[in-house]
Length: 119
Image (cartoon, rainbow, N blue to C red):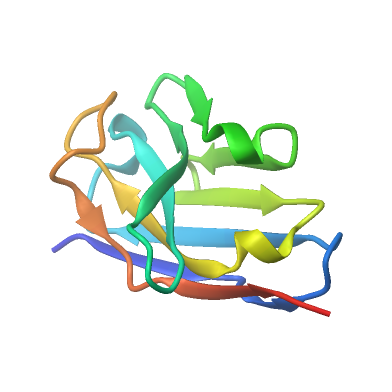
């Protein structure tokens, strides 16, 4: 059974930083694509960043140059370093493991972690 557990969310002031972690168990982590999504109140869930098994990375335009996704295959963990946070980054952040090395469709979800950016 594949399980994803996010951590690292919290309350931070505008301009601050947070690092989210997502620990995966029950799968061969290194062969699957991983992604971070977020969902703000009243809005659809959106893809923020993704990393393939081969290390190809993509970002949502609004987080480029502020967020960094990375993975540690030895620890079965994917990270999202978030810098220069803005109030509009406030959302529940979810990680997802894909069902292939390159795609996230149809994969498994974590339970989410709340990120609140406010003064």
